[in-house]
Image (cartoon, rainbow, N blue to C red; front, side):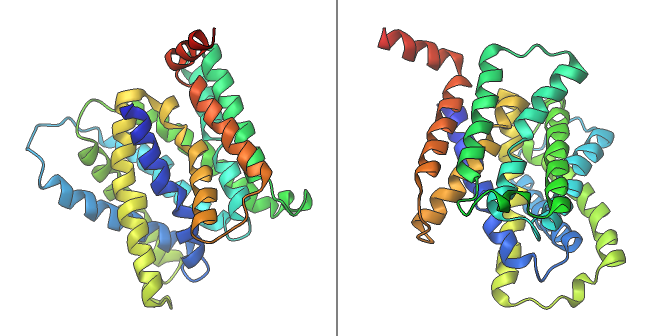
Length: 293
């Protein structure tokens, strides 16, 4: 199905993000890295928008600003800073709380009634993430750096708020929407980078420059365009499930590319997450149950 294909592509892009961030985060300040990503992503979508037909899309600068704040500015900084002291496995587990916070905000702020399938799917998905991401070395590694954990949880809350705001955007081009969001984020982040850090004096090698460009083009520009498209078509709650698939992609890439071990807990976690995705689509689940009967 189209929506699951789009969800998988988004997850493939974001699932590799933690690898690239780890390769540069120790040499580039959190704010500077966030600013570079937002600026490169904005430039990327600006180029793409030149090839689109000119339409009179309605704009909402105020909403763009809040989306930029909650989706780009705050999470970029919080994740980059939090990941300095928290292992990737724990980071992915904490960021995977986005669907939970999204559902909670929908229920509390918009009085949305959650279906049993949605609740079961979200709970199962998070259980799968915990199983998949739980450190194999032992429970002592879960605590990690308390501040880092708190920063990543705040990033998850921020992502959830931005998802709800993006769902409220009027119909229009996802390229234009996210181009505007990333330009606003760049305008906010660049002065902050020069104020608190020295982005023009960082010592990075050519490979790290390439990693930053990749982060900007794919993990800020392209993926946000696809993400906004998915939200427009399927809603914020379904789009938030990408946070469950991201760690699956990360573990799989680690196994295939880096030859990392694939333990039984990883296989069980992946199986639970796939089951959660099944519950996310009641029609598929009902057809599957009927066939079994």
